[in-house]
Image (cartoon, rainbow, N blue to C red):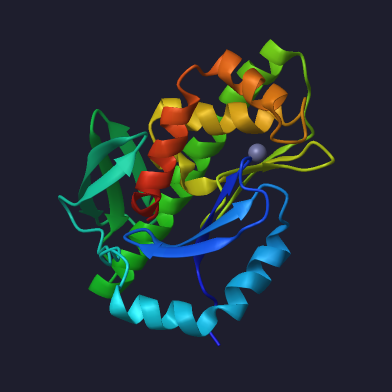
Length: 233
Ligand SMILES: [Zn+2]
């Protein structure tokens, strides 16, 4: 059986009921804030037949399969960048460079067409990961210094529905696709996780602290919910 992909939204006001809805963003589970991930997973599994029937009736907005061709658009830090593919006769590692709104990929001409797509995708993903680590580390340092807290380490992960998490050992994890979002949205996710170094819950004190660093946090959180489907490559 294939895994059902879903997004979780949690509410502090929702105390007991868990609901599943299917819309343009795919399967969304609204769950109480205290419900552990495994219980949500079990809940989704119980409803598998119904979900699969609904998905057939209303297929979610599917991402087009990207071919990473010259001229394609790719999202980086919230704005569309044009992809420029240059083939070179010199063998060696594929190089990526950023200039203005243009991302240039220099790739050896010994790749066939299908291989080239894979190689461009792999190189872009490596480059995005590097940039993501740079940006997120800077932001984490900024906000953790502001709050006078320290963290253990930062890891970027290839996950689909979680933007960030903070472990009991103060390790901060972030979704590696976050680098595609605008700066202020990345800031919100970083602020959210750094605030968990102070408050482990989603109490009003926690949200008060988030708000003290990001007045528009609700807007940024909404942006993520609405645009999640755009953030992948
Ligand atoms: Zn949280």
